[in-house]
Image (cartoon, chains in turn cyan, yellow):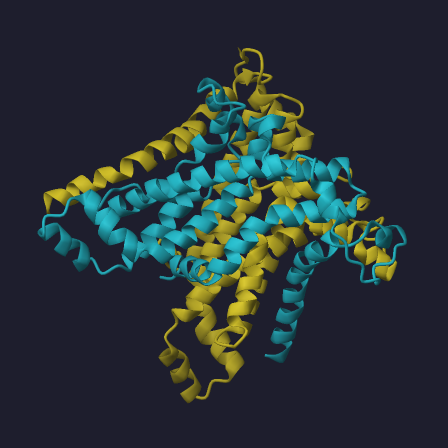
Length: 257
Length: 290
């Protein structure tokens, strides 16, 4: 047991190190790097000033708009679909198959499809293909399976319409799972790299495309890279820290049999 | 059945429409595009089975299949062992919540930012490891080291998911079962080996299949960390597909490679499912409710 715990501790340290370093490097003065002396506890905000004008903020704006819109649609369509499946609609197999097919694999046919729909190089290319998410449907369905169905039946007998049941009865019960699914779906969309790279050009580059380009074009500017990476990670880190408990329990419960 | 319940089924329509248009349609049309010569810009020319024939003589493709197999073969066993080890080690301890939260974080944090953090730490020329220890990590020059680097990054990102899934399964094992084994005189390793592990098998089967499917298809880590190098040593199938279609602008041949990846994925997943079922494993964790 002791050996297992030590190994677990080492692995946890391995996971934590890049995350901590990201924060540290963002505040490290350029001199500390030039002198190759990382032990000086330097502190500077210069790196963040350097980020201004690189285009980080406009690409973050693109990402926030695209991922935000996508997630709202994914929650609405996903909740409706999960509720329909719980009522007997037979699309579970489709959801499970698509859960195992990342969009980056279907990049070629999706590219053609988006061309046909005249969506290439528009914000729509980043949103429309992702309006529904198999992961969101799956998590909400698993959550709905734990809901005591008498509540819904009772509402039906009282004459409530399905729309009312969905918005007034089911939504409040599922609020924790909806929050968790929202954060997971936001992260999944926010973290797409190759899809936005291929389907849009520079004006619409998302934050991931921007970061991967920055790493290629300015590989020696540590502080700048660190600050840009930290700023780009901040929205998700904040969401994660706030909702961590709900996210983990929803994810775990989704896979409990 | 109430009439309203039948109405409720129609609520699946919007999501299903999106899944069909952007999931099923690309899966079907890719077959047609695989018969095209097409740069992505100009109009496509039908070339029949040329691309399919080319697949079989494409040494680079078969080499990348080998690379993918090596990548999956290294990643998946370590992923399973780590998930099992961490989930058991933290089960019902005070640190459980903290460790889970920590391990899950890399999967959510901005992936481009993660790539930068790894670059700053492990860059062979001026990374932190080099500065502090003087040891220049060999992943930019040595093929195998580069593969290990991509494997390490993938494990760093994904192990949290595995830990959560195993942990959920551990919670599903009734304590009475383990208590009974202890009363019968089983040691702790014995309880793990003969009670916990067999009960976890459906979960481990599920994780193995999902991890295999995803590792055959994914290439974002390769794109961000090594760009397929050095000397093509990390050019996994997905990355070869990306390069062919969107850097050399051969989208028709890219479609043929997509088809190849899909067929390989399907064959491997089916073979795995059958092999694991033959060894007495019942329903997968998810198939159980589906």
